[in-house]
Image (cartoon, rainbow, N blue to C red; front, side, top):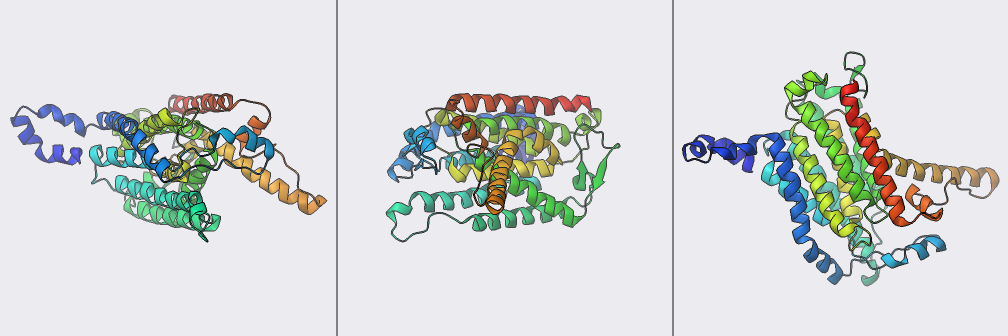
Length: 382
């Protein structure tokens, strides 16, 4: 909103000594301001939202299928969940204030944020208030959530592909570490939409699985958002992209504003979510954050880079797939199910091995930071 107002009234602002407001039309300033606004929004509204969630009795049950894990996590029982409304609200507010709202990608990103946040909120509300609503549902089914995720991703993929049909770079599949002239693949509409579904749905569920320990998902997502902020600034800038041998996608620089808003919101949320957590983001926040970072990766054509930067999320999701797949296979083969990990997702495996919760979280943050550093280093390695 501010971006459009300054652009529209810039001559008047300059004539009246307010020309300095033109900084709101520079993407680096927009991105920095978005991070600050998101952070402060969560910080200033967090206490009130947590109190409201407590009044609504939207608290985590902290129950698992294993007695040892129930004992380890018993202190979390009753901690307010659905704190993701803080994150979504902060990202939406800072984007509406500071991003270019005429930008197609910004509009689609906001739809992604609100849609997946809404799906997560419905699931959290049904699940966490089931005890006080006789005969009510205990959350959305896995199939229902998948249908909403896939439906959204298909729509985003369809409109994003056709909006950028005049720019070849928006339909090309790139490989990290390699210059575009060494390897790039032009995608058809069908392949582009399928890829969008896989990335957005996969990222959304991967972040959701990671959200199991105090500060783990929010801290890791803050690191991931920063890395994509850098990539979006480079790919959206015609000079930087050419200098660093990246493909240029006009209008993609506004994805840096979204990434900055995500980073600020996650850092602000970490203020309340660090151990011992006073609030959890729940599906409301995790589904929306994962889907949004997935959409940013699609827009700037860095899907494989998301696989590297978000390595923690990938490891968490893969651990669950391996655990379930191996358990079903061994049950069919040997008559009893066996497990690869002591417990999945992966962070619970390390808890069961004796790591303290803070050790797991900080070590996963460190790995996430190193993966982000590796990804940023590839900018020059290419």
